Image 1 (tube, one colour):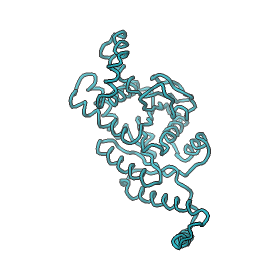
Image 2 (tube, one colour):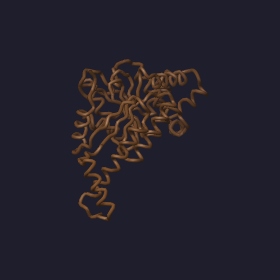
Image 3 (cartoon, one colour):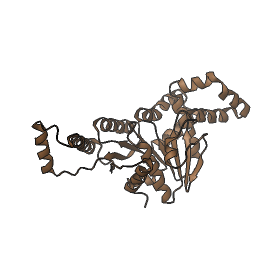
Image 4 (tube, helix red, strand yellow):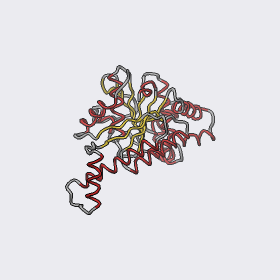
Length: 301
C-alpha cells in the first residue's frame, strides 16, 4: 500500500457495508499522524444529514460544504452536488444575489439533481475547486457504494461530449485528468471475505481500470481468525459430511470455510500487481475497530 502515500487524491469505495468509511478514516489518521496535511471528504447528496466519516474522526456533525478543522493536520468536508452547482453559478454569474435566487428555485434544484449526470458533475466541480486550492498533501474521499463510484468517473464524460469547453467542460476535464493520472490519484477498493462482495470488487476493479482510474490497493476487511490446521479441517469436514450437524460451532466453521474460499478467490482473481491488505476481524465499538484498522494499515515512511 506504500504508493498510496505519494498520491494527492485517494478514493475509497466498495460495496455498502464492507467498512469503507472506517478504512477511509484510518487512512486519514495514518497520514495525519505522519505529519501530512489531509482533507477528509465524504460524498453525500445532502449536507444536512449525519456524516459517518466525520463521526469516526471525532466530529458529531458537519454542516455546510466548506472544509472545517477536525484536529491536528485534518480538515473535513462534505462533497455535495448542490455545493458544486452553486460554485458553478457563482463563477458564471459573478453576482451573489443572482446565485442565491437561482439556488432558491425549487424547479432548478430538482432539475440539477434529477437530470442525468448533473449530480455527478456538481460533485466533481466542488472537488476540482478544493484541489485547486493546493492546501493539502492528500485529499482522501469516502465515495458512495460501487455503482455511484463508477458514475462519478463515467457520467461526467457524457456531459463533456456535449459541453467540451467553458466553465463546466474545463472543470470536468480537470477533474477527470486528476482522477485518471496514476501519479496523482489512486483508488482503494474495500471488500469482505464473502462471495458477493468479492465478485463486486473484482468487477469494480475492472470497471475503474477501463475508465482509466488506477486501483492502488485492495483491502479484504474483517477476515475471521482461522485456528484450524489442515488435518483438523479435514476431520471436521468428515464429521459434518456424515451428518454430524449438531457439532458445536459447526455454523462458525462453515463461515470460516466461506471466508477462506472468498479470500482465495480474492487472491486469484484480482489483477496481478495490485497491492492487497487483509485486515483481521476486530471486535468492539466503532472507535475500537478504527484503532485496530489504523494499527494494521501501516503508513507513510
